Length: 64
Image 1: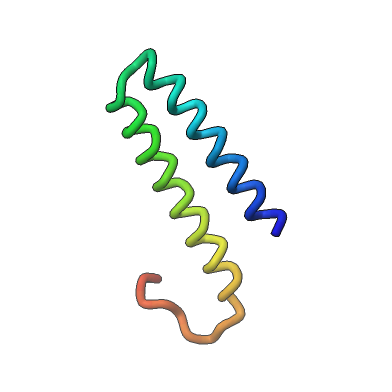
Image 2: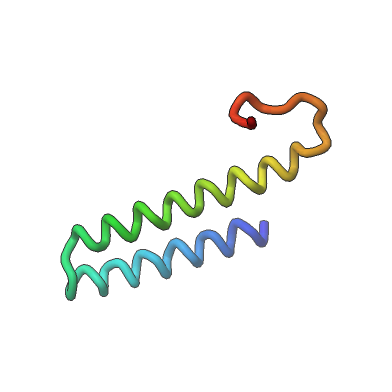
């Protein structure tokens, strides 16, 4: 539950920062930052899930 609260707060902070940046730099900068942030979160979540599944015998198809 704590992790979800942290993610929610981080998302809110990103939205506020994004709106502030939007006033100064425009929408394309915001979209680029959000794309990088989204990719980082995606990789982080995937790594966390992989750690949770590390004790499983069968490797996933994506792993080399």
